[in-house]
Image 1 (cartoon, rainbow, N blue to C red):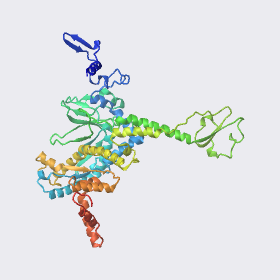
Image 2: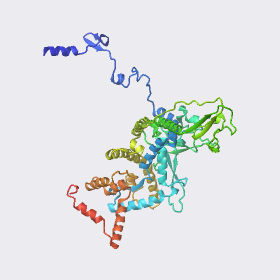
Image 3: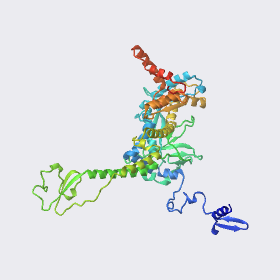
Image 4: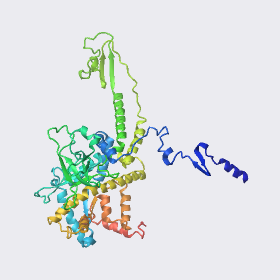
Length: 547
């Protein structure tokens, strides 16, 4: 025991003399490091010595670089298949053909029964469709509301944010409402006075002041002393537009909220990640460099494969030009297959023939390449891109080669992000548009909503709604339906919700249509197929599991 204690004391490290000082009876140690100073925050480690980033304000980190990020993001989506897939996959699953309204008034607050609320919701949905399905809801008369959703969402994903203004025009035949929408790309919301590309890249132009009230204007967003958004500055055209050099850009100041109503005059579709951030960041910003490198690598491999597929013949003449125009084998190639004897016209191609004049020779360079590493290398990079964008690689590349469980896990992971983005978009765009429309509908008497203009709580109760869109694809429909039925049976969900999420349809409409179909089948003497389903449900014991 004594020896063990002695060895334990011997193993106790003794501080070096340079690390401690004795002051009286107190020993003070010189601190060499704390926390991350020898880890991620170290400047002495070789791998970290050259890593010296600076964390600054959102304006310095984001706004100064926004024009470059937007340009590169848009270029990637237009010219890089993987980037186009990332945006298209998100758009298809979040918006699809458009998010559909499902009014959900709070029955207890508005003084209605459940049946009355259901009837009111049906009327509102039908009335809203008059506005939403018409191109007159668009100030440019080009798109209906569902198309505008698609445009606004894509602009938000590519540019970081997009905008929509509320404007009012006279009602028209077939359009009893005066509300109109104008979707605006992010580049047009900028500081007044920016008239060139060089000015948009100038960091000194990120923040300017409104000379009339002293407010700061941060990249087109005017804020007061509290940092609250009070207005947006919109240019009449793109600040840099070589196709439109005749029109001098002018800026309109649009107040963010109405003075009397407090309702929004303009919508900003974006998602902030930092406090005091006033402009959004393109979704592809974290992966732009990797996307570009994958594009270059793919292009190089494609070019190499094409060149190796060519079969070109070079014939070297030992004598002067032959009497048949320089081609010693006139019968071997047709006229359209022959290449000029001009040394500047030599070509590579499928089955081309080049004739070399005397004194010329062909020296080939070993351009052998192998695709053995292309697929696994790019696959790893695509997985990293998918992880950064919350889109698993299987969903991003539309390739499901794994097991059912792995493929379903990838779909579930992707849909967790899609549902989150749908909630964000509905909150920023769809719900404010619905509330502006419902306000006008109640004001002109087309919708009855007592107390709408007298109490903000009652108004919020009337405006309550849900938005449904595309549903998640299913790999095994039988299992999905069984799971949905069990959730309804145990009260974890409702038939209306499960119908909307499983098929994107309305449960009430399905039930009514089913009743009509059953009645028609009885008239024709056809067997009712639902009876079999009902018998199967009755045969199940308590607990929901079949016998």
